[in-house]
Length: 322
Ligand code: NCD
Image (cartoon, rainbow, N blue to C red; front, side):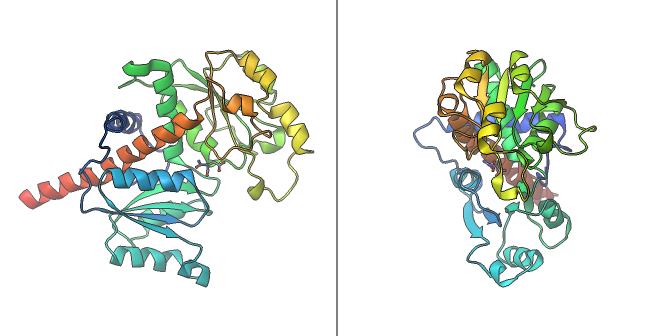
């Protein structure tokens, strides 16, 4: 694997390999000493043009636990705010010897541009681009579902036969897009629930069922209900009458949590708007995987960095030997 840009083009064997390597990484994270020497001498640059808490910290923890050097670059306070282009920023990183670049950008397609421009030779990992994709989030979500449902017998398994329902701001969500593609690739059945205004205009090519009524979706007893944040910062118009109205019709309140049943898991990628799309009762319920998702995120990102960078080293060694 050279880059991880999306889940739409990620093959089933590659997806399963990432999830299985993440299982190995998770095992190492149970030890007292969590650090592995695997990526010693490699440099990972976190290039964040958009705000982030957990994703940036998660990539940083993942790289450090593999002993890579980490450079954190936030666009605020850098020369990007002086108008420096992505090309100049990228070429600067190249000159500093970056082996992998983890990029978050408000423009959909920025990671692809970086990977195909020829400006850098580093592997590129998409950490969220506009409303397009957020592949490591979908991978950690799949990992979390697999682990909750199959426990210790997760390795090698796909999600065939499972039903995942995603509710919320589908229109603005790169998490929803990456999840739809990956869950489909792994054999799960996907239902998307939102007000009509928060469903993209043309979803006919998406491998998912569309539903507008959350109670009906819950009555179908999904194995996992993934709640998405209402992305107020991406909304330039009114997509629903009031927050109260949204909450009443599409929020996971205590009554809906009850009817969901104890076997279904409740997911949220964070950050949560408690009281809007998800109630505190649901977020903190025994079925909630919100914190598992954060923990698993580190293992999944370790797996991705390992497969991108250690694989490359093996290839280099082979080339040296030839
Ligand atoms: C998501 C993101 O940034 O796309 N968050 C995350 O990565 N944990 C979802 C969101 O912002 O709502």
